[in-house]
Length: 170
Picture 1 (cartoon, one colour):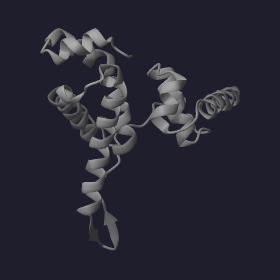
Picture 2 (cartoon, helix red, strand yellow):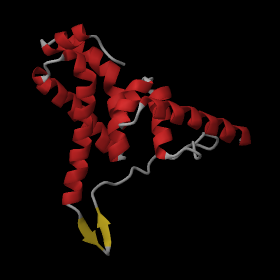
Picture 3 (cartoon, rainbow, N blue to C red):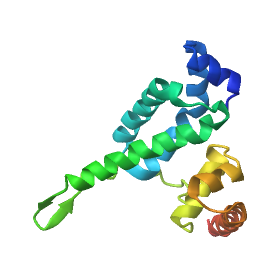
Picture 4 (cartoon, helix red, strand yellow):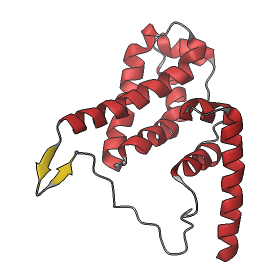
């Protein structure tokens, strides 16, 4: 998923082809990161697009091109967190319920026979998604989640064991 410093430099100098390479390498990953916070498909799509626009506009502020990956991830997380913070500040009360503007997207439901990973907690599911779906290294997962490398590795293999047991029941 990482792109070379040369590609980042070319994008910084205005290369549309370099931007396309970065987009191809990162769009699914950025979408997933934002969706873990926002939980709404349409809002996630909008924020993913906004993350790429903001990244491109602010790329000149990035001095160490080797830090692009971490910088872009943090920029994307902050966009999602800013939205949630704004929604929380604009919360209102309706019939005794607090509405935060953060509405989960319930339009997705797995088809019958689709494996749902019911035995995994949120962190285990996040690690499995990062590792298998987005092919993120254990090191990057640890950085992203604020955990040590050994904890992430241990959680990953524990989650795999849980999934194997769950699959045996099916």
